Length: 303
Image 1 (cartoon, rainbow, N blue to C red):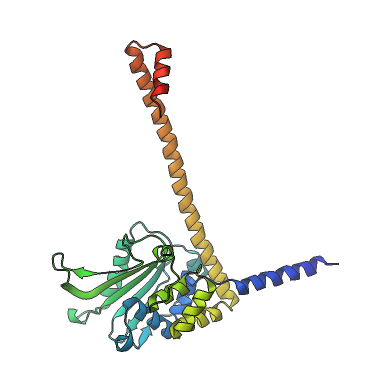
Image 2 (cartoon, rainbow, N blue to C red):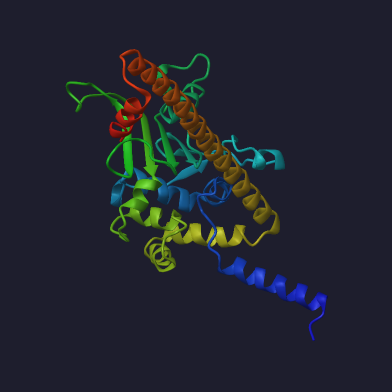
């Protein structure tokens, strides 16, 4: 016969097994930072950046420096507006800023440009020549439908309108990886490094696909091993779950606000419709139609 204590132990054992079987979301921005943005994560971060930039073979970047190790307070983890980005410097001194944007922003274009400009402007110290300003590459992984391009990967630069082959400067480069469009393509393909990374990042990918991506790419395998290591820590699991909850709460609030706005709009429309119908009724009455004739007319002309 099971006691209350033995049932509790059994329940805890089941939860632990479920936790082991569950694949954590690499694009939880806290977990992404812990996998890609701390000292010791250079292998996977460099592999990902090379994949985004399309650099292969002898053209690949071979070294990278992660610029900061952040310490997150419980308040920052629970703050849905906190930016948990990854900052690094490549061997040619280009700066890279990687951010996972899981919450829809109405001004994603300006937001991205702002963070790019902040990284660009603070790279120049007083008295330095403008020529010493580095190239800054912004990489945004977004979980909403932005920008309005056809593909899941888009890149923006400063080009001349009539002669797009002429670039004003290569200092600006802003990438978007649209996970919504990536999932909609409905293809389990691992033809190039970026597709392999996105298959691994995508929490709803078939487990076999994510495993195959890791087997094909040493950098993804390193990221996978790092994720296993990080999620073996109870404090990291707490921070991960708290971050998930903060993002989910924000999504729920936004959906409620949208639905409430639609409801109020519909109610307002009904009231306006009643007022228009009343005015139309009085107009027909003024024209000499009887009440029965007006009712029949309204019935015949109402869709």
